[in-house]
Image 1 (cartoon, one colour):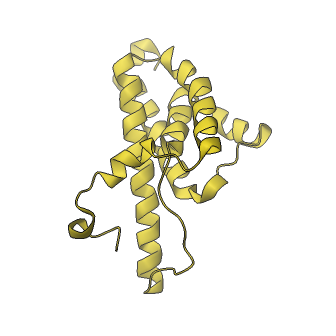
Image 2 (cartoon, rainbow, N blue to C red; image 1 turned 90 degrees about the horizontal axis):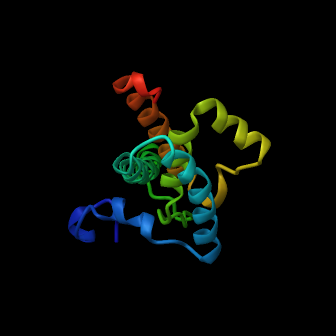
Image 3 (cartoon, rainbow, N blue to C red; image 1 turned 90 degrees about the vertical axis):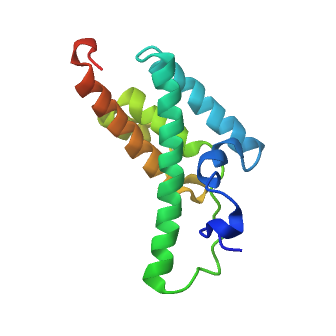
Length: 151
């Protein structure tokens, strides 16, 4: 069954619901730990509606980036990767998005290098990068729309 054909999967909700499907207990705990750390930082900067918007949009962006990268690999090679066991599950894209929205690019890069946050963990590299990129874009957009608040 192809995960790209809507008629086989039934809906496009796969790309928005995967953030509620963790891979294993350690996956849940690590996502929760980073969500608590960076979620509280973002909560002090934005309204609740913006916080939820950031989580949902960056999670969706991470999912779509993950799927687009897999699809691009298919088109570049001409065949599906038989060794691929990647599946888009977990809220890591949204967590990276919250981190990017809360901290900005310079601090995120510093954290990745100094604290050893592994952006390539679990095989969801493109989901992490997609969520982080969307979070940084949201931060920039909100800064442009409300310069008086400094964010």
